[in-house]
Amino acid sequence: MFIGEYNYLIDSKNRLGLPVKFRKQLLSGAVVTRGLESCLFLFPQKEWKKLASNISKMPISKAKNRAFGRLMLAGAMETKVDKQGRISLPDYLKKYADLKKKVVVAGVYDRLEIWDETKWKKYKQESEKDSSEIAEALEGLGI
Image 1 (cartoon, rainbow, N blue to C red):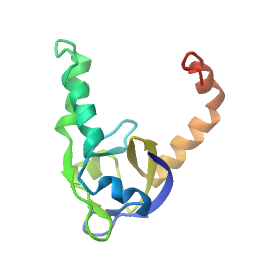
Image 2 (image 1 turned 90 degrees about the horizontal axis):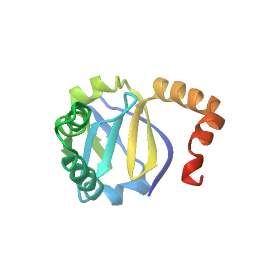
Image 3 (image 1 turned 30 degrees about the vertical axis):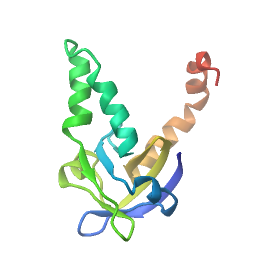
Image 4 (image 1 turned 60 degrees about the vertical axis):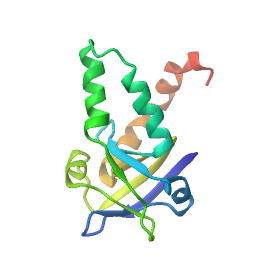
């Protein structure tokens, strides 16, 4: 399970270090893709296969299903963690998430999210401000 927030820097070769405690889960391969709210999602290969399978089962007759499939699948790239615990980020994904040098790697259960540090701070402030409202909307889930 991935949890927590970690600050990192993207180097001049578009490499991003990952938290040491998560590297083992990503050693067998990972997939980085466009996420939601202008971040990137990084999935271990096993979790990526589950998501891709679920996407493939959505009826393609619905425009939103096709759009979501394209967002997740067409933008995806397989990656490996190097010996220093880094992954390479392609330019098109860096541009999508507007990643500069300072980023936040956030653990979100089955995936890591990669955020521009400024965008993360803004998103976090807004969601923390609305936390009671969000919790109330999730009441039906028993949370």
